Length: 120
Length: 268
Image (cartoon, rainbow over all chains, first blue to last red; front, top):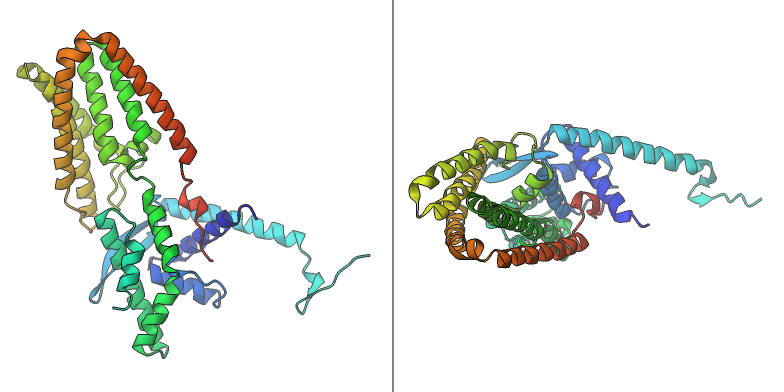
């Protein structure tokens, strides 16, 4: 699909903003939440979250600050007002697209992993 | 640590040392956290570390993602805008003559210093002259800089008549230094307020000072000879700048990368 990259990029932005909408989190925390909530279906290539977080930070959608976590320093991200607005927009767009796809597909044709073809 | 090589390789493309250091700290924290979770799930320490590294993703892809993320805004980004500033300065200098030439040359220095040292500020100043107040991540805004810039300009203009025959030099050096100093000061102060003091601004200020001095030498030479006595040549130079600007602007548009927010390709 021509906009496959763009679509998956938007989906990751939506996931990250969605996790941060619930409260501040660090990169690994975001990855963990996405994996757990989706029962492991959405497995992020973990390192790729960081360039995206930095991009979102640069765009003013999230704000990062450093905290001490034991002997380690940890960067924790939280959603900004602009980020919350962007999340609402992306969420509504995703929901509209999902509804549109669902209205095209006919779930009743798929049963037990097989498609019941209606060629008549 | 087993992941030291991975972390170094992944962040090798980040040219800004402070950003690279922060990215390494962040990645190490991630790997430590992941290892702790895996150990709690029953892995032995060595296996957990290996698994944590594997889960991070392919080193090449990560390095490319980081490199592309930080290449935007790199040294070539502001070139067309710097040239545009130079053209504007050249036109003012040639068109107005006298004090106008000083103003034009000031615009040229402004374009050079701000474009070279603060490409993002320069771009954002052109695209969004009145952005929201300074954000907590230490980025400065034009609104915060403007009073300093105006003060610098006024200071430069007021000092100028008292410093003849060095007025050309000072009309460039003083506002230029104040402007860049205020940029750096605002950035450093806001990063301190955010709780994570940024890198010391002295390096950029020294660089700005060197450029300002160079600008003053150029301006003095120009005021004494080039602009005042050789207006046709100055016009030709402005036309040359304009042509160069148009070519670079075209190339900039041609190769401009789209925002990573639109093109990011994760494996979600």
